Image (cartoon, rainbow, N blue to C red; front, side, top):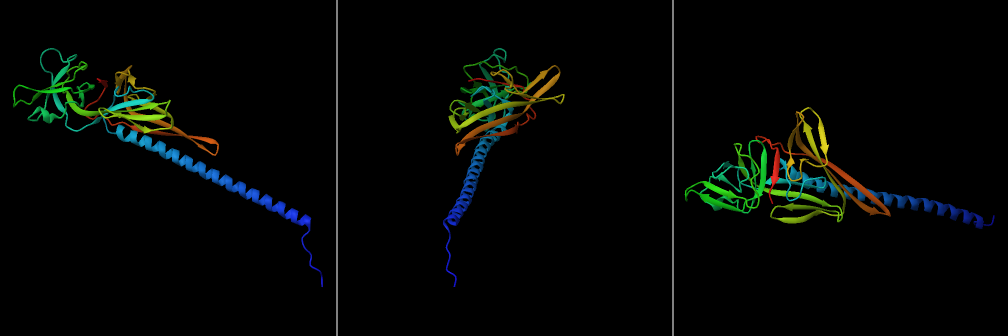
Length: 292
């Protein structure tokens, strides 16, 4: 009968070395898989965050009145955008009124089909007045006064603090709106949203970038992508004729960026969305002046 033979020290050491190598390889694979999973989760979270931001902006912009860009509450440029949203009511017909020329007057006269001034619901609200040329002024109605007796349907709708800037080119209409704006603060990384009369709130934070580009389609088939609206910050243009070519603001390109630290690495992602602006329809908007 042969005596039992155990493992030699060398065999044990070799086995332990092999086991340690296999364990190290498996551990490295597990660590790598966990890092990859964390990276994928960070990417998914960042993309979802950025997508939600652009969806909020997109929902508002697609409802913008006449697709126009404003200068209030923020001057529209590469990091801020303002526009008007309909805020109930119908478009009121505007009369030229007496006592001087229509431009540069501090009031206007509107025909309102109601029985009392209180029912107009305009006092203290923002309004947009547009003429047939597509020039508009956006302002706060400071006073509504009934004219011509108790049964009259003529009202003096006053905006104090700035003059009327558009010509009376019939038809001229008055619509109740909300001025809505988005603005990015690069220092704090906050994207803020403000509604006229409703104050400012933070829509998103910890962003590393927010960029706006304005897409103009030319009547000759060309496309211009600009870092700011045509015109001036105080009077942004939706429509402009240059050297015989009509350029119309048709879309807004939004790029939002954010980053996250994962396993000692900084992951940064960007989300780009091109938002089509509503067309003016019967009113071909050209420019809007905002009155504080």
